Image (cartoon, rainbow over all chains, first blue to last red; front, side, top):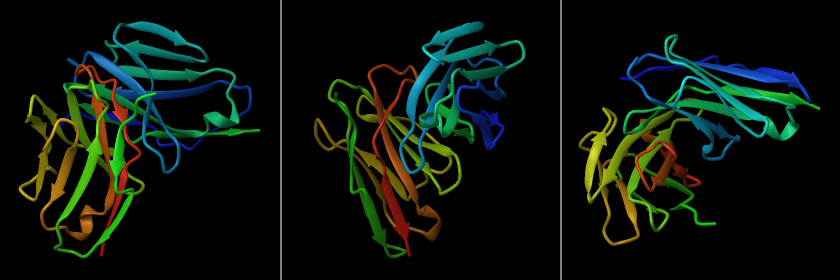
Length: 108
Length: 113
C-alpha cells in the first residue's frame, strides 16, 4: 500500500497570505503527483498536477516536487476565503492514492 | 461542461440489504473508478475498470462488492449484503487516459442502519 502523508491541520491563514501545504510519499518510484481540493460535503476536484522536479505554477497555485526527498508541496498565494477547503495530495500508480488531507481556513 | 453524475445522492438501507449505486461517467472517458470516504477519513480507492473489466481493486473491494458497466453509459457499484461499516460517501470518477486527472461525481451517501 503506497502511503501518502499530510499534516491534517487545520492551517489557518489571514486573507492575502501564503498558505503552504506539505505532503510526503513512500514509494520512491512514484512518477506523478496531484493536488485536489475538497470543499466540505463535496467531491474532490483537481487543482493541478506535477511530474518533474521543481516548481510548477498555475495562477495563484504553485506545486513543488522533490523526488529525492519524496516531498510535494502546494503554495496558495494571496489566499482568499473561497480557498477554505481540505487539500488532498495524491500519487498516481494506475490509481490515485490520497493522503488524509490538510484543512485550510482563510480568515477574512 | 460534461460531468460525472451519480444516483442516488443519499440512500438509507438496513444491514444485510443489497445496494446498487449508479454512475454515468463522462461520455468519451475510458477509465472508471469507485472511491469511498468514511466520514472524517481519507478518500480510499475501491476499484478501477477499463475495457469492460476490473483493472485493479483494493483490499476493501471484497466478494461483497461488484461493478458492472451494463450498457454504454452506466457504471454501477453493487454491495450484496451491506454492513454498518459500509456507511460512507461513495464517489465515482472517470478519466480519458489513466493519468490521475480524475473527474469525480458528487457522490452517493450510503447510510447502513
